[in-house]
Image 1 (cartoon, helix red, strand yellow):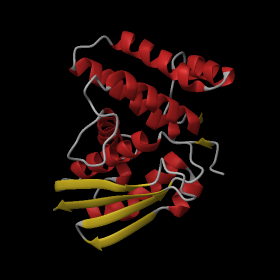
Image 2 (spheres, one colour):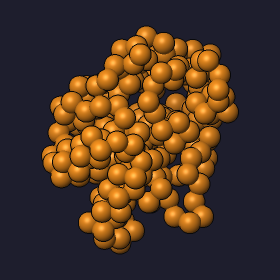
Image 3 (cartoon, rainbow, N blue to C red):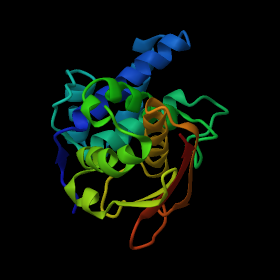
Length: 225
């Protein structure tokens, strides 16, 4: 089974909170009211009294630090709740291409750019897009999803500007296609920070929500430099 906790998950959760705050500011929405609605939605999805209490005291009533030790289920519940509240009546809940935006995509994109300037700056400095995909992304993926998932991650280099990333989500507690959309957004935002041009990320091969024994997902990435 996947590890129960991740030492770096705290900064990814912090990034989602900062995204919500920034989204509310840009759209002239009351941040406090939105966060209250997200808390209500998250508690509905918690599934147990213990998780409900954790949400109230640690996520919405406490202080999330970059070094906070947090359970994986928290990101799943929080991501589903914030997506449901923020997405808008006619907006898609998830996407399979960087050509079509959605809340999870933009949250991943926002967090990539924020982390590139802060906690993971060293993993972006002096990196070409291809070097970042081969060397930095696997490290960041491990920090978010754990060692077991990191060992299964595959990075295929078709050329210096064409890559395929294959993730194995078996036994991972994730928000399924919503979470896949954050991966698309994170990859897109990271490549933007590295000055890649004409970025296109497609996610046509997704077994995250199928009964397949192995939950493999493929992300096709092309860009110009």
